Amino acid sequence: MLIKKPQDIPSSEITEQVIYLERRKFMTSSIGLTAAATLLSPQTSVAGYGGKTLKFTKDKIFDRKEELTSFDKISNYNNYYEFGTDKYSPAKNAQALTTDPWSIQIDGEVEKPGTLHLEDILKQNPLEERIYRLRCVERWSMVIPWVGFPLANLIKQAKPTSKAKYVQFETLERPSEMSGQKRNVLPWPYIEGLRMDEAMNPLTLIAVGLYGEVLPKQNGAPLRLVVPWKYGFKSIKSIVKITFTEKEPVSSWTKVAPNEYGFYSNVNPDVEHPRWSQRKERRIGDFLKRKTLSFNGYAEQVASLYTGMDLKKHF
Ligand code: MTE
Image 1 (cartoon, rainbow, N blue to C red):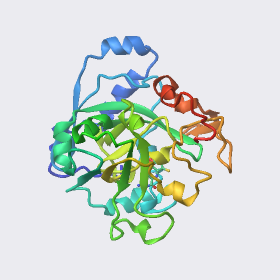
Image 2 (tube, rainbow, N blue to C red; image 1 turned 120 degrees about the vertical axis):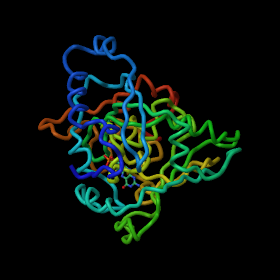
Image 3 (cartoon, protein in one colour; image 1 turned 45 degrees about the horizontal axis):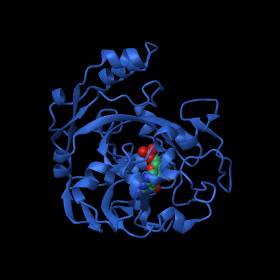
């Protein structure tokens, strides 16, 4: 495995990968969702973070019926242009990133702007596990057991003003450690944005871990966004700034190719990317392709956010 755990965490505090995988296998087995839910009492797991302990609940049911993509695949096939444009470089190059200490600046239309330190964020926001599908715009997908907390919690703590209509996110810009930023493949820093109601939706997660472990650096450590009903590029990694705005943010990808990457970027098999169809996807590890689902399968939870909107126009 590529990720080394910090030396100073006793192994008793770390969820064993093997035990974890066994537990997962049990939970995703054919006994069915209801039976699994009955058998699973709320429980807490721990993993290390920078010499400190993370606790998270595992009692919520999110897509447990789908087979998980392996930890190895999730952490060795990445899109993280700050560490190279191919899928395999981030696993190697991202290890140069210093993720501790880490803080996030909160600014714009909020009553409580300021700097939040990661330790304080973790103290104030209880963590839980969420198994989500991630559908990349490039037509591959994975099923990932994230550990994190709803972005809505952080937003409520910042107390947005009535002028705050959107939330803009910014990734760290540190070319000395992020080798990919020495090339102008994207306008740096990487920027993404959500409409306020999308950001407040209970599905929208700030992830700090996956597979019961601290987030690997190539997956966006120490904290990243996960918006499961949108194409993967909306799920911005290694966030250092959150700005509340009146105007719709312009993302890095929209700046580069506005006809290919719209603001909403909801997973939509009916809207083609200008260079390819989005009807099908390949689950990493599978041979055959499968149909792409509207809103990546989360239509029931989020379709109402877009009632009355022409989703071909607002792609
Ligand atoms: N965030 C930053 N800062 N830089 C990136 O290049 N790539 C995006 C997104 N977040 C990217 C990013 C894309 S295109 C995808 S598909 C997902 O991260 C991939 O996340 P994963 O590597 O954890 O699977």
